[in-house]
Image 1 (cartoon, helix red, strand yellow):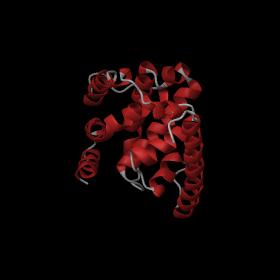
Image 2 (image 1 turned 90 degrees about the vertical axis):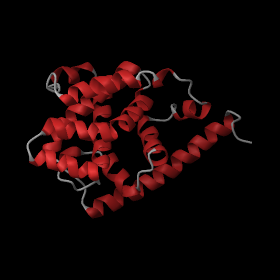
Image 3 (image 1 turned 30 degrees about the vertical axis):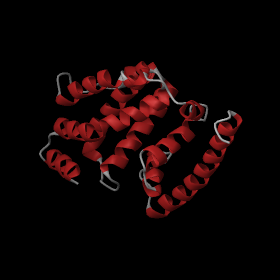
Image 4 (image 1 turned 90 degrees about the horizontal axis):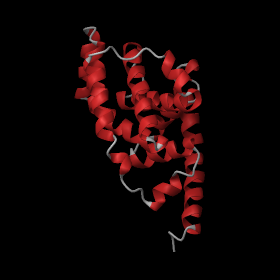
Length: 201
């Protein structure tokens, strides 16, 4: 957990910019790939990633370490994505951007530029089928299958109401059980779509 140790050290020294940069270097690319898959638009994914980075910068000093850093980052990314889709540009106008010239702001700009190349690649037919699912189900599939998050981590990431604070252990178990059932239904739905498209024999 060298990354988490470094983030904690920098936060203890009051270096939020440095801590944010370390967190983004370690996990930013995979978060940006997730956002790109969800939004399927270079500008929307990049704008949401910028909102995510701002959320990390604001939230890290208050992060209670009740989950891993990676899990928390995915939770911030998911909330940023939902807000971006719900509020659009009105939300962006209200957010305070990362400090201009900060290492985190420079890193975000570099990552957005680099990631734009990946959005132009051809998508597989299965990925296109997945895109027809509701965003919540797409996110669940990507985090469980592509990112291999454990069920308790998924419960924390997919927790709906951030105003209620983090889930307690009983809440994590309930949410994990709900997500397992939903995951099975989503897999069955995707299997049926693939069968109808002739992708399965």
